[in-house]
Image (cartoon, rainbow, N blue to C red; front, side, top):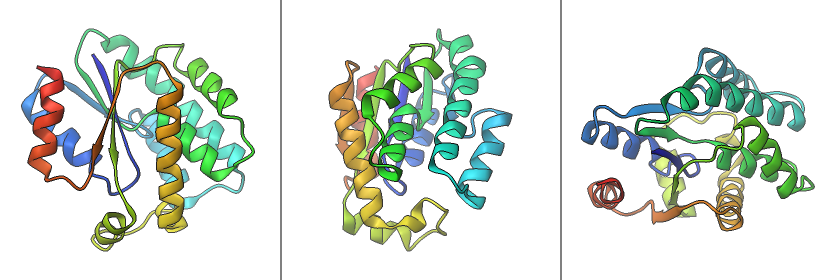
Length: 191
């Protein structure tokens, strides 16, 4: 089973992924961008140095996604795969960065990068302005977070819209719920 965790920065994806790894020690845990050596370099480039063109950013994320699918996801489809981010984020950030992009075109580009193999389940942790503000105080900002809270909320809305458009199973949870309560709900989907 291939599970994708989605949500904007500070929503608690990484915390939930870490808890699931403890609950399912044989699971393969990965992330996008950065789940391969190429992806790690792309991640550094985009999040810490930035790129001049939104199209360049889009194609870098797609390159990472194609590599990640080929090197990590496809060879391990018989295992429980838990990914911290994926194509939903890719499309949502692209739409937030360049509003005249066509959502259907972006979905097709991502389907191509993923060889038309989408996750079995997407878990979206939905946040709000106050929670983002509180959690951002606790960490240093990368290039995406510096774009602001309203930007992150636009990205989140795009994620919801994308999920509604696709025919894959998804669950949306309140990121403000207690960590253990969220973990229990998510774990319940897998047993």
